[in-house]
Structures are given as structure tokens and as C-alpha cells.
Length: 124
Image (tube, rainbow, N blue to C red; front, side, top):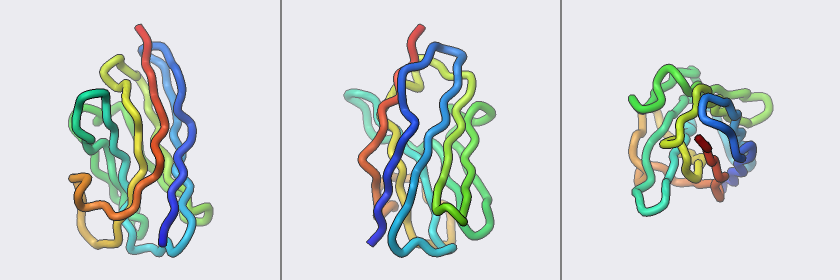
């Protein structure tokens, strides 16, 4: 079993920055892929970014490319999402997710473990 706990959400003005953290516990091994998703009210959960713990290779949704950066600290079993140049449309609950695998995973159905989510609100 893997447990994920997100933190770092909050209220920020447009153009500002936030850093989300996802602390993992349990049987996290290097062959896991960690992802960030978000869900705004009335919308489906959407892919934001992912990182392979083994190689550090990353992938991003087009909507956040160049503004968000996903990173990991394997020693701390923690994954981060640095969010810069935030826009109102980034407002959502952000979820951390994990899956054991060796490829890229872009859909929520592919991920097995989920955190409880952290609210990010961007004001004008």
C-alpha cells in the first residue's frame, strides 16, 4: 500500500507562485511514476504533470508547460509541483497520484494511488 499526502495549496493572486508537495509513504520504489492532476468544479480530473522516479523524466500538459515544474526528492519520498505565473484558470483541487510502471501515464484511470487533494485558488 502507498499513502500520498499533498500540501502547499492556498490562495494566490494571478501571476504569483505556489509549490505543492506530495509526501509518499509505504512501498514506494524507483519504478513508480508520480503524477499531478487537477479538478475544477463541474469538470473532469485532468492531467497536469508526471515524473518517473527512476529517471526523473517528466511530461506536462500543454496548458501548464513552461509555467509548472515537477520534481522529486527520492531520499524524502516527496514529489513537488512548482507553479509559476499562475492564472485564474489554474484554480482547482490538485491531486497527487502514483502508479507502478515504466511508461508515461496521462489519464486518471491509469493511476492506482491518490492523495486527498489540496485546493489552489488563483484570484484576479
